[in-house]
Amino acid sequence: MTLSREQKYRKLDQATPEELEQLREQVAHCPWRQSFHIQPPYGLLNDPNGFAFYDGEYHLFYQWFPLGTFHGMKYWYHTKSKDLARWENIGIGIEPGDPQDSHGAYSGSGIVKDGELYLMYTGNTRNEAWVRLPYQNLAVMSRDGSIAKRSKPVITAVPDGYTEHFRDPKVWRADGKYYCVIGAQRTNGTGCAVLYQSQDLLTWSFLGEISTQLNDFGYMWECPDYFELDQQGVLLFCPQGLSPKGDSFQNVYQSGYVVGKPLDVRTGRLDHEPFRELDRGFDFYAPQTTAAPDGRRILVAWMGLPDIGYPTDRHGWAHCLTLPRELKLRDGKIIQRPVKELEKLRKDEVTAQAVLRSETKSFTGLQGTNYELVCEFSEADAERFGIEFRAGSTERTALTYDRNAKKIILDRSLSGQTIESEYGSERRCSLDAETIKFQLFVDASSVEIFVNDGEEVFTSRIFPSEDSTQIRFFAHGGSAACRASLWRI
Ligand code: FRU
Image 1 (cartoon, rainbow, N blue to C red):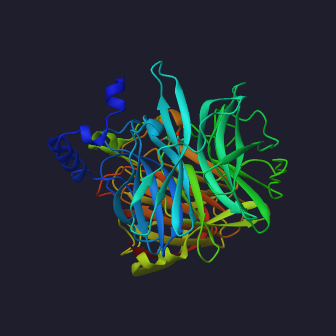
Image 2 (cartoon, rainbow, N blue to C red):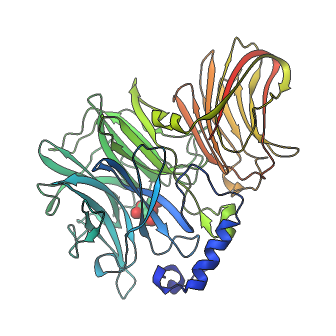
Image 3 (cartoon, protein in one colour):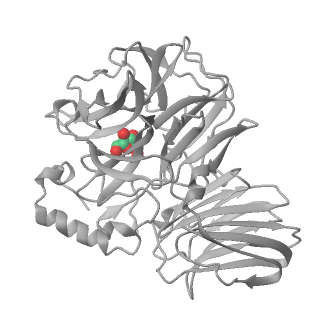
């Protein structure tokens, strides 16, 4: 589909009330609307933005193009929550279309200063010759919830040595100063992250590049995020242009991190361990973190990827955000767990246990389309064991532990409506453990699987029919003991 510039850069107020009504109707009839994930009212959602705890609540915005399921004129849509479990839709947070963000209010972050929430974001602009000029802008939210954009960008020019692909400022405060990382592309066509410093969030000075050992690692790094955990420095970013390698880098674009000594802001140096992916599933990109008031580091990501069509497109909407996860470091690796507040969503526990002997079994009451499921397999001599969920007569999503290969395998080839199969229908990762615990959050069209308390995570959209509700537990080529608990959400 080729889109005209007029279609891509349409603003919400150019739509007639009838068009919007029709969009809402279309969305309302979609069988894959989520029940406990942040999703757009209509149109396309992408990156989480401006995630911050401010004035007693978590504020979380997302990239939103209302008038289509392609990447058009981006708004910031505003949601908030008191507990990270239940979210309230507020409405438009940042509206694009002024000279500093004429072609979209792109991604950015939030930080609290002097009782207000400062939102720093990239203003995407194009000049008459259609050359992209990225500005870094500010918008400030006051206690009454109103958001005022500053008309003058705070960073107006891309420094020498970098291209127009220069965006997604993530701000933090350290030693009484503010810093931000920005995703960039060098003029030699490689990706990196650059560093700025400010006293007041208004005037920024360019400190240079974050110097990593990844000098030729993709053609662009999007959505960088820097924070410290246990006195270690962590840089998250989304490199574009990596080729698949073994079980890794299977998605169109990647999302991962390096961990090392804290960033030396004077030199920009970050000594680090090798790059690792954050998630092993099919649909995960552009994560952003914030610090909870109790110091926990919380991550939310876009449960989707750029440049891929999804089955909800024809229902007038696309994508959702992941559930919030708490990050911890163990031996230089990020461990991700669903935030404990999500237990509030649990209703009506059903449990079961059995020893499976080369068989597939279902249990009464263990089924559904929206639930949390925890199941643990132990004492196994089976070659393979695991579960099939959102299963029916022809559909199923299969999660397997292959004991010989010591791999977790997620197979969505029979999950329902297919999603761009060019990138395969299986994801795998190595895990060497005797006991395997799967914690699944299943919503109408997604699953997030935490393996062995966050050792690995698989995040994926699936598009089964509404009557594919079964859960089947299996062990093949031997036996395995299995215990399961399910809560409806
Ligand atoms: C990542 C991204 C960002 C950009 C935004 C635009 O998905 O491309 O780099 O700011 O989306 O919506």
